[in-house]
Image 1 (cartoon, rainbow, N blue to C red):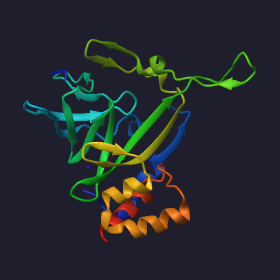
Image 2 (image 1 turned 30 degrees about the vertical axis):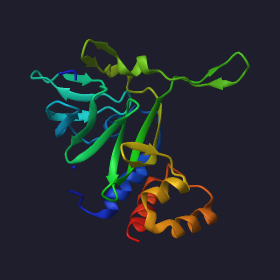
Image 3 (image 1 turned 120 degrees about the horizontal axis):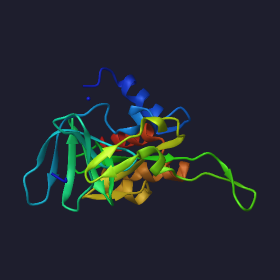
Image 4 (image 1 turned 90 degrees about the horizontal axis):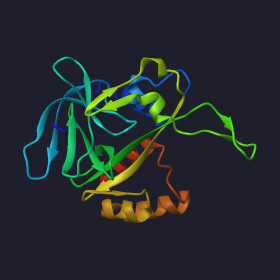
Length: 222
């Protein structure tokens, strides 16, 4: 192969808010590194062939599927062109342009799709123009890849990072930006309400994920 029941709504939103934007200097936590709390039973769906099943997770840094071999070694699988979705513990992720988006279903054909970006940072250094610069340090934190095998070096836990989560709309296998036109395409019965919202607010902040989901559910109910 190259290939969690919500106890209460407030707990769900609390975790979601906590993860939307985060800077860290004490190392990358498991909650940030992976898109799911733990490896869980799931399936990888493909076009024209049988799904792959097993216990999976997804790495937020390199957007690879992770699983353990019989010896407990964590292995990685890159996104393939014929992958259509990954379902882990009942949560659906879709790969678009080599990035996984977590889907929050709103209607039968429209969802909120959330993308997590984890930027790994080196120590600030002075550039040639006297300005501080920070660069990604993927090789420092991610160890090395040997074929399908992946090794996370324990001595790189203190590498700083910056994490953000951004919301998009997902309809017809397409990721859409949070524009008025996109919302009206997804929720045609709420065109007037959407027009009124954008007349007042002008634009929607994609990093306010819980607000985007709440608005979508409100408009979908109209």
